[in-house]
Image 1 (cartoon, rainbow, N blue to C red):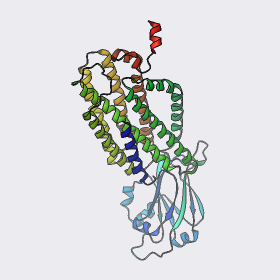
Image 2: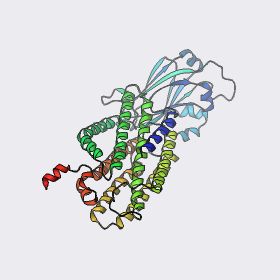
Image 3: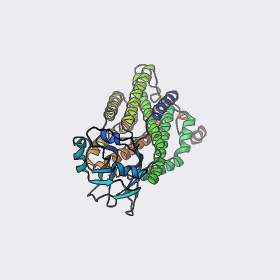
Image 4: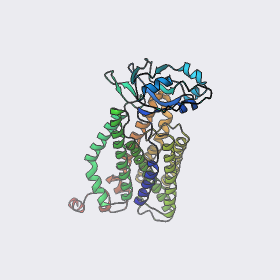
Amino acid sequence: MYKYTVLTLVVLVCVLVGFPAGGFGKTVTGLFKSEVAREQNGQFITLFMYQGDHGLLVNRLHNVPLAVEKESRLLLYNNIAASSLDNLSCSERLTKAKVIIHLTDEEHNQTIPRQPGPSVWRALYVDRYTCQDGGPIPSHGDIGFTLLFLNPDSAGNPCEHFSAEEAGLHSFYCLLLLAYFVAVCVYVQPLFQALRKGGPMHTALQVLSTALALQGSSALCNYVHLARYSRDGLGLPLMGSLAELLDMVSQVSMLYMLLSLCMGWTLSRGRKPQSRPLQWDSSPTSTTLALAGVLILGGLLLWEQYTDQDHHSFHAQSSVAGGLLMLLRVAMALILASVLYQIISSERSALKRDFYLSFSKGCFLWFLCHPVLVLTSVFFNHHQREKVVTIGVVLCQAIAVVVLYQLFLSRSLYWEVSSLSSISLPLTMSRGTSRDRN
């Protein structure tokens, strides 16, 4: 298992490093280009969702005389979709702008008009050459700029870099890391003892611990990125990409474990006596099926990150890759349901059925939480959907891991279900303790 995990990690690192940094930061630096503005009927700069009464846009220019000569302007559009804007002619775009900022000063502070609720603002650059039909553009060079988009903080001061759909994620990851820290302090010793003793589900516990460690590392990277982002509006895009990478490897590890367990149990029933029903029964067939699922999931995850480069591990699935990823999760849940139904329906022991039912709950929660939350997010406002999906999936998958941990580490259930001796079971009493009881 570990060699496949390491191989997957290396491949994902190589591919993800090649991705351009996402446009998550809202301190935007770049160049105003007349050629691009003419080609696109206005050079697109960025999107930002303002909320509250004191939104602010700070514009800093690096070459004011050139901007004045070009009659440079920054156009701000409120709640206009890109498709609607594309249907407008160049001259119509100028009249539809909600706010027009004439770039004549080295620094300009623009207060955003009050809106009844969070609203998306789109920034475009135009100049005197943008709407001209043909004709050469003088080669005066480009204009360097820095734009700061600021929402009001809790005190009403415009110093919050987070867009409305991102507000609150920083605090969430802070609380999540605190919960991880407390859980580690409480459970690391018994878990370490269980891993040292081995037992029928030793490999499953190793993979589950690896997936949980990757989830915690992903949360830490997201927190570091957002903490930096809250100060400068840029953050650390590399940390955001690393958080996505770690989460992808965690997803792949969990899928491999769940498929291997279910397929191994099913395939072993016809060729082995059930003296060790909870052992990880691997075979070439079960390993092949698990690896096939891992490769498909990994490919779709990479495709999704490539098409949507905002630094969120879980997206509201507006892309083709995201839709296919949700279908894959639903399909995997159906496959596992079918496999577990065959096992449970032929199992005579009530305690063994309880074990498999509890295992089913953890599996279904892990796979179905994302599709269900994406469908549920439709009923929320636009600026809440990404947060509902991200926070909901992280919490649900953490609960699924807890359910599986409790199942695999349960002394009483293992004692009744498995025919192995108590000495080889996780978290069981030592031989000396058993002798004292006798």
